[in-house]
Image 1 (cartoon, rainbow, N blue to C red):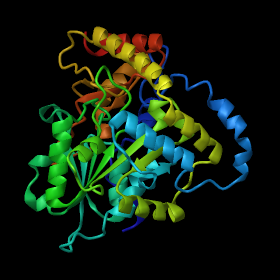
Image 2: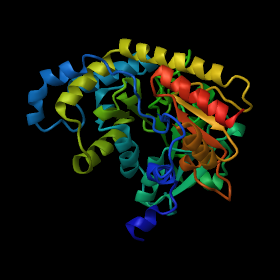
Image 3: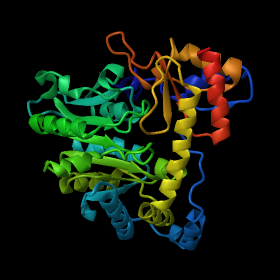
Length: 393
C-alpha cells in the first residue's frame, strides 16, 4: 500500500476542502472567521521578555525530554491542578501535542496483538484527525465510535463487544471534547480505566482544553487513575499551552505516563521528533508555573459562554458547552449551512462532517456545524447573531 492509499478515506477535516468550497464565493458581509480553533486572546505580556533574556540559547541544541526546570514546572502544575504527584522522569515536553498524540502511538502500540491479530485503535467520532492518521501510520485498524447526543457526546467504549475489545491496544479520548465541549466525569474515567485494565489496553487522554471551563474544573484521567490505584502505564495524558496560555505558535505541550511508556516515547523522540528550542522552553517553564494568566483567560471565555447562551436561547437543539471554546450547533446539513452562512452573512464555520467519519452510512457530524469562539468578544457576538438570524429564524 502506498502512502497516499494508506491515508485515503480519512475525514476531510482538512481546511483546503472548505477553502475550495468557499473561496470562489463572495462573502455576504464583513467576514467573521470561526472555523479554526486558534486562540485570539492576548498571551502573557512577559513572554517576549523571557525569549529575549534567553535568546542566546538559540545557539544550543535543545534538551530532548525538556529542561529540568520545565519538567519540574509541569510536575508542579499536575500537583496543583490534579493532585497528582508525577515524577519528572514520567514527563516529556512536546513540540505541540499533535506531535505527541501521533508519536506516542508509534512508540506504544504493537504491530500485532498478543493473539497475532491486527490491533484496533478506538477513536471518538467526531475526532481530531491526528488520531486516525496515527492509527493508519502503524497499520492498526481505526475504529470510529459515535460520540452523539445519545451517548452524552462522548464515545461509549463500554458497550463494545469482547471480540472487539480483545483487539484494542489504545483508546483515544478527548475531554473536554473537541468539538462538542462535553466533559468526562469521574465515573466515565473510572469505568473506562476499569475496562482498559480488564482488556489490557492503554488510554490516550487528550486534555488540551482542560483549563477552559465554566465553573467546575474538569476532572483528569490521571487524577482518577491515581485515585483508583491503576497501573501507571495504563493512562497517557497530553496537555498544551496553546489554549491554556493563548500560545498556539509556541508549539509547546507535554505528555505524561508511566515510566516505561515515557522511556519509550523519549527513545522515539531521539530519532523522530523535534525538541522545543531552549528559549521557548524557558517561556514554557514560566507558563506552567503561573496560574494567574490562566484564570484571566478563562474569565474571558466564561463571558463568551454567557453571550452564546443569550444569543441561542430558545434555539431548538442548542447545547451549551460545558468546556472548551467550540459551539456544536445542530443544522440539517453542515456543508450546506456553511455555504449559506458565508454567502449571506460572511460568517465562516466548519461543517461537522469534516470532523467525522462515515460509518455504516452514518456520519455523526453531518447535522452540525462547529463555530470557534476565539474572536474578540464583540466580533464573536456579531458573528453569532448573524449565524442565528441566518440559520434559525
